[in-house]
Length: 118
Image (cartoon, rainbow, N blue to C red; front, top):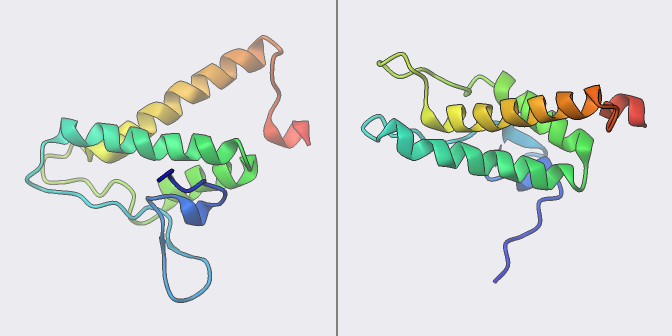
């Protein structure tokens, strides 16, 4: 069975909905205090890949997904070690890499910002 298409923020695996309308949490990921940090980095990378899929359908929804995730109360509650969680690191790492690629493409005149393209 094929995975469902991601066409809105509600379809992202890291958001949570409730019985009411809308999204109850923009960053709803489990953290295992006894888990190995490095094992969870790929989870954050997969979450970012979902945002990339969403961007292919709705760029503004993808922008909102990133902003609302990293601005949410649930984002990066640091464990006792003080190093943050691997899931958030994986997501942030992908975000940073794609931001730099976008800046490069913008410098080279290959793209313009979403707001300017509209």
